[in-house]
Image (cartoon, rainbow, N blue to C red):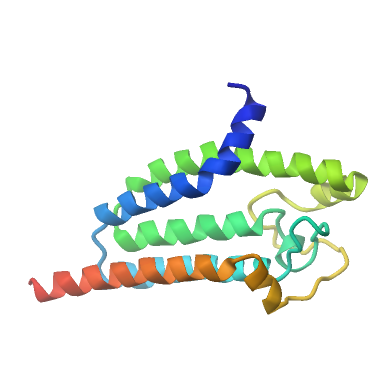
Length: 186
């Protein structure tokens, strides 16, 4: 399989594969009150970062370079990374970090490359200039100087980010319930 064909497959498989992996991870987790606070804070930061990004992006309509896109080119994926990291910390199964990093590297980095190819085809030199100024994944502490964009809740809904938020809240609720079960079984 060529890297190009894997990029296309990864784009289609990342969400269902990630969902299955997440369910398995959730089954293996043993959270505590303390780990829920720490991991929940990390995961909430990721969810907020995703929400911020979803309120700025016009998928397929414009090259978004404002809001969180002025700090990294893939803030939705960075937010997902933080959410998953926080959930693993909340669940106290740190060996799952290795599995998660392998999964993320195998699926999300090829997707980022495929999307960059699409953006280069669609926006040419504007995307080249943007990619020179803004890091691919880990946010820069300095905002790149591009035209600002406006956060809009309608974009959050259009980008279906409310579904991601609902999934995050359901996952946190399951972890809280597991902590509650552990407390009453003491």
